[in-house]
Amino acid sequence: MEDRLTKEEVLHVANLARIEIDDKEIEMYQVKLKKLLDQIELVTKIDDNDSDYLIAPWNNNSEFRKDEVGNMLNPKEVLQNAPRKSGNYIEVPVVISNE
Image (cartoon, rainbow, N blue to C red; front, side, top):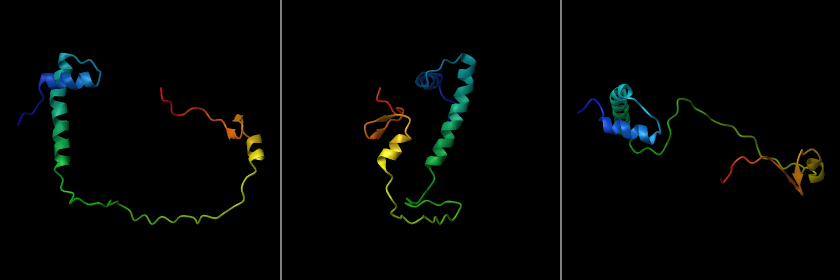
């Protein structure tokens, strides 16, 4: 088994990452990337017995509060405190854009 990647493989990865590397870095990454890929290969060989459950290092018995029906807030009073509003809605900055 080879202990390094080919120059072409390293250049391909650099191209995918959109980075420029010089000849010295290519030699370094030939070895480092191969070691990384070998470690990933070890993880894929782990027998997990097709378990559908998660084993965690703690016993987390979460206690949730009970849902209790409360009084509704008056929409007009709520909108009075809003810095920006549009009709019956509170305006907030755009977080996700489709552009």
